[in-house]
Length: 116
Image (tube, rainbow, N blue to C red):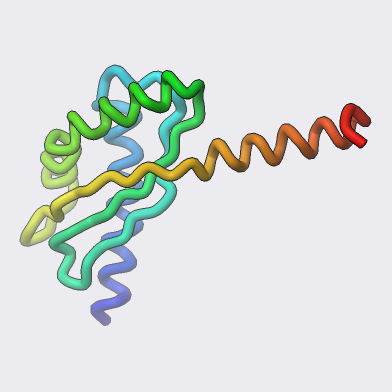
């Protein structure tokens, strides 16, 4: 039963944090996506894995904006999700979207015959 509840909390955190980053946090320039959320067994800690699609400058700026606004994100999560304790949030950057975009570009070039 506990793992089912943790999975529901994890999915809700993923959805809400994505929405908070998209609508509430100003100054983000690239496309920010929440890739995954890992939560502790007691829901007291959440590691948010995110990715940014954009130029290297946009990525660095967005990483700074997200780090500066971690407290605000946690506050907004606390207002939206009814838990006894709002989890401590740690953002961890992943370049997964960037890697995927490069692979798609290579596949596109190969299909057009630009790369043999």
